[in-house]
Length: 254
Image (cartoon, rainbow, N blue to C red):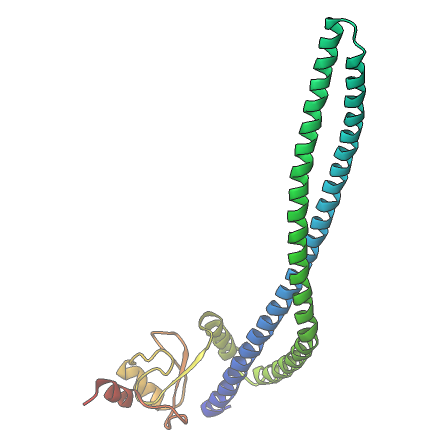
């Protein structure tokens, strides 16, 4: 395989790698957004379940306190009747102390019930807000899940197709050259660069004249001393590209 043929294969490989990266990034973003919504929905379900359980427990406690206050109310009435039947001051004082203690316990239970009423109302309000958020998110997820799953499937098919094309190209590249290509690509993201006028197309650094002259002969690859990418010479600029001299002239101005 001639050096020009190797260049063409590497260029096609680099183009496929760029497409694969774009596809992979798009897939990851779609998956992250979908997984994020699903995770948030699951979190809201958990908050709803915990909120309902908390309300249920507080209501049970409040019912128990109401039962205690009713029982204490009956005991207070009995103590009052008992006070009216006392014959001695000693008996009256003992019943009075008992009555005051019952009244204190009764007031304490009423305060606890009032606090629970506030907490229950707050918990119900929070549950209602979470339920509303969950309903909105569930609707959004239901509306987009099918489309996103379809797009993911299409992207995965294109990814598999491009991977197959890539594997076919790899089989035509010299193993040593491919290992070099992969080593640079994994470190830099792109492994290939060209020069037309003595400047690296990737990092825009000026090459040493001796290296540039060697590349112009077109019989071997070089390596950019700045970015370490595989370097080759192009006689013609790619469409839309401009030489470094032209760029310098434009940037310097009149």
